[in-house]
Figure 1 (spheres, one colour):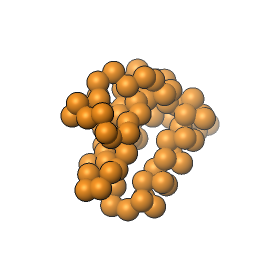
Figure 2: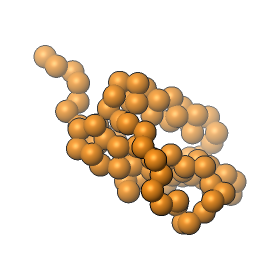
Figure 3: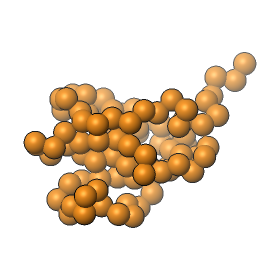
Figure 4: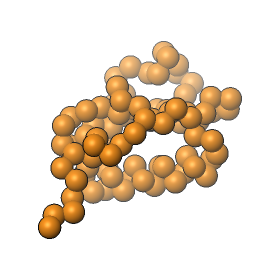
Length: 85
């Protein structure tokens, strides 16, 4: 039995705010592992979130279906987010 998920987008869920720095850091490790396993590929940011040049942001593309995801780092009071582009 193959335990690899055909498309990681089937299990990814949008996150509208990280409630602690520890939660965000755990999520970064999770994303790092998905990139390391080639489920996601980091790609250049095409359009900054809200047009902001202040917030740190990374984009990823799913290797299975090419769906793009954005990760916007928290910067108080903004809690960050993870969502489909």
